[in-house]
Image (cartoon, rainbow, N blue to C red; front, side, top):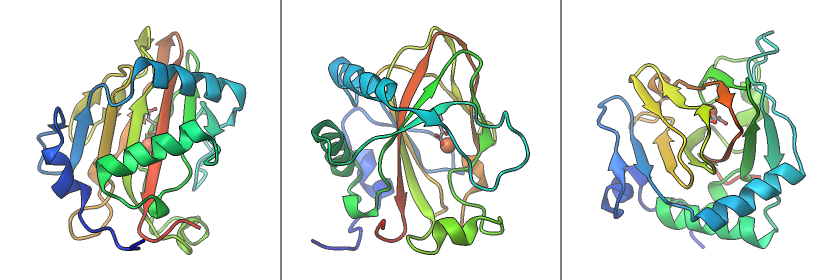
Length: 211
Ligand SMILES: O=C(O)CCC(=O)C(=O)O
Ligand SMILES: [Fe+2]
């Protein structure tokens, strides 16, 4: 198996049927509806419900309400999780060896993840701890698993883009600019769920094989 990503998702994704490119010169970002079926989504929601822990953040900033959701580390040896991983790699063209384990996130009413970037701050206190082995995060792939009754949108305020949760909808973006530097225009806020629950899965890829 090759260890080099042969083609960037930014080159590959425009050729995917039904995909929409977010029209901003500041970010490489795509949206694909119905990436997962209602059955696939329901299975993942059930799995997230079974094992969850309080979500954490890198570079703790003293705000205990910064990320109030819960996280489920999806075991990569489970057939459904492995199948999702393969489906994501087939879409992105990124070799699965670059991927962190897939996570589920669950937001109850009032929970959120305030404005943040998925890349690690190169000047932050936790940079070495998180990036010395597998490098910086490259692409984020995220899928909404259910219809949220109210709230729960993902807001990218730098590019003025609001993405509404819709069951099965995938959104992905490059956390870096084409020159490899981190892209502050990827700043995003998982806004408070106002009514109901919100479930997503998140998949992050690294510069180097994950270990
Ligand atoms: O739940 C969302 O809308 C975004 C989640 C997110 O940004 C993250 O987990 O890093
Ligand atoms: Fe994020």
